[in-house]
Every structure is written in structure tokens, then in C-alpha cells.
Amino acid sequence: MKLPVDALVAALTHPSFYLSGDENGGVGICCRDHFDGGRPLAYYGDTYPDPKVPTVSTIPSLWAHAVDHLARAHG
Image (cartoon, rainbow, N blue to C red; front, top):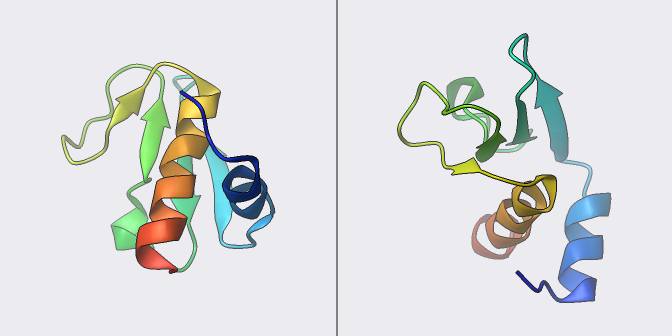
């Protein structure tokens, strides 16, 4: 996966995105502006219990979802 550097920096520094860990060792990337009941944009770890949340295999993939969300939802 190759992300444009500018888009990645924008996501990494955007104040709405944060990582949230859980007791199972998984990590989700969330957006403060689009809370959606606490559902993360994507999840790294075992399968997330909500089928609407994509499960990714790497931490950089979490940020790829943030880049996509930033482009779609924050324009």
C-alpha cells in the first residue's frame, strides 16, 4: 500500500483521529468528529465484533483508512 505523503501527514496530524487499544491487544483508529457509537474506522487485531468495521493486518493500514476517511468525510 502506497499512500501520498501529504495525505498521510494530514491524517497523522489531524486532531480528530486517535488510536484506541482494547483488552485483547487490538487497536482501532477512531474519529472524534464521527463518533458512530464508538465504532472505529478500522481495527487491527482479531476480528472486530461489528462486521461494519474492517479488520486490517498492519498499523499502517489503520492510517490508510484514516487517509481515506479524511478525504471522504472531511473533504
